[in-house]
Image 1 (cartoon, rainbow, N blue to C red):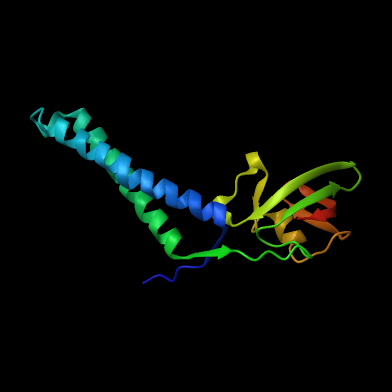
Image 2 (tube, rainbow, N blue to C red; image 1 turned 45 degrees about the horizontal axis):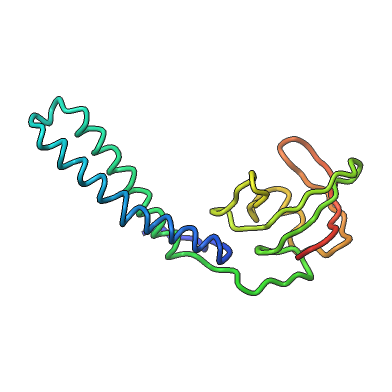
Length: 156
């Protein structure tokens, strides 16, 4: 048996996973089952494209359900957030040193990261560089695009 690692997430991230799991189990799974029944009713399954598509969809849905169940089983919810230092569950405002450009990020677990909404994984290069640091700290970030410096302006 493989050892599962803890999956750190916020309460919001946990609720999103539960919501997705419910949607898959209560809506999507029954839809796929009905599509399979309809396709079977059409006769010869060996040349039935609708049946093949429904089986593929069923495999995808069941795989995602299993993945979500494992994630929820191993979830470690971050409830108490220390805003003295950067940690999972904090929002941090950073200044890109030399650019005078600022950006606010929410530090979240890897499974709920969404760069389009500025939710970055605790495993990302920038988060790894600033984790455990305080307001006013300046740190160098090693990223795939090269090194750059950031200054922590605030932690919420």
